[in-house]
Image (cartoon, rainbow, N blue to C red; front, side, top):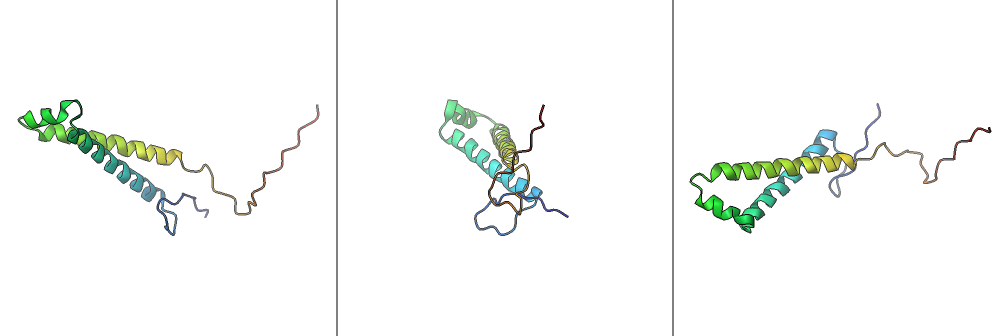
Amino acid sequence: MSHRFFPRTLPGQGNAPSLLEFLALHCALGVAFGILFAAVLILIDLGGIKGLLVESSDPFVPMLLLFASCALTFGALKMGVAIMSLPLEAPDEDDNGEEPPEPRQPRI
């Protein structure tokens, strides 16, 4: 049974993670960045959003929507980037760094 090659995601990590572990780690990082981004938006009062939330009679729902949408967007974005950065195939074990020879061209 051949093993799939996934790059290390954390320095010093011994074994390569499974695909689900790889995606879960990147999704969690994206969600964390999304929550941080939403918190910074509120703290710097970009576009008067903090004032709108403070003056609202029920600020829980808009804050939940803001944080959830940012977390979902950033999590999906981070997972997409992680998938697209995977190598297409496993490195050859007998690869010595040389280019493979060019195939012979047929004579016409």
